[in-house]
Length: 117
Image (tube, rainbow, N blue to C red; front, side, top):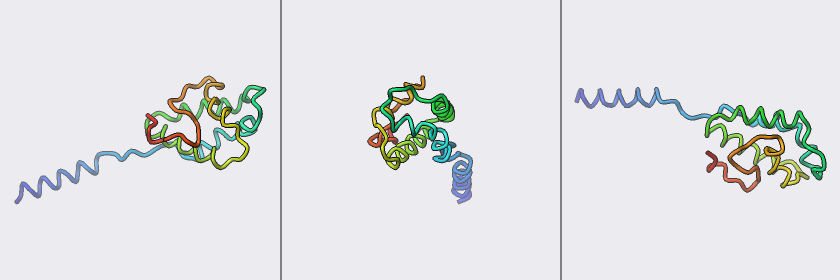
């Protein structure tokens, strides 16, 4: 009986020590970083994205260090893209590349963020 109690206590300690994966990126941070891009993303794309837009994209990419962070950022971007009217989907999808950033997923309302690695 004592060994069973010890095993249960050991198991509970292991659960308490193992950190739960949580994204360190919030949707507020994502929004603040891509807000300067909205005017460009509503345009025809004749001009390049503004410097402050690309800086935000680069900042966001730098913040997304883990899979959980990237999935969280993806979900926030996907939600934002669906809530802002008049966005050019092609410009949205190509924004990271236009800013010199390589991300492992397409920014689109149809992206499955759970598959982002």
